[in-house]
Image (cartoon, rainbow, N blue to C red; front, side, top):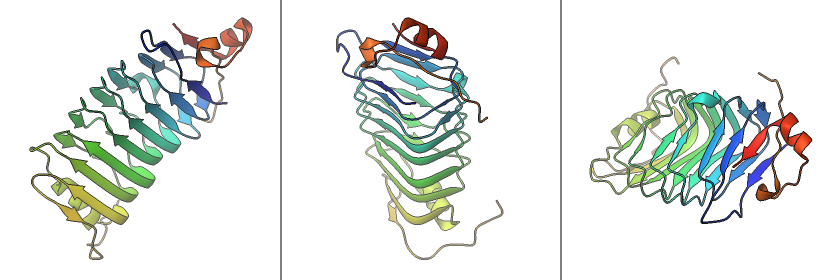
Length: 216
């Protein structure tokens, strides 16, 4: 099943809470003010969080969300200042762009594998993926004068980034080259969801209580 929460009242965006749901398909969140999902472990397709003018933070520590099999997209969120996915270990793609108040992307502590592309751009001073060991391509760009590309150059040099690498920052600019060093050693339970007419999905009160989704 998929969850789409969009086309909401701009002046009063809803709070979204998913419960009793460990696995879900696509999640699209537009114009929401908060999002929580305490039991969610796996997103089988994509997680898209974009166009939220009153969403101050994305903090997914309580979710224990370990994998997004499609893309994670966080884009065009005017008030967003904090992005935290500390339990995420793998994703299909990762894109974080056009979030003007985000000054650091440094809470992806367990992210080890991105099957496709990592794209990060903005005005941040710090970006780190300390456990990253496998990504197809990596593109990082920051207008912040304190941003340093050297850590990402090491990911490319040691083969953790496979096909293409580009980083633009004040201290170090580099694009991918063919020369690399040798690489060092290196719940399937299903819940449900429901929603209400504010999210554009009409389900009964009984279904909402059984599957577990609230907008308030």
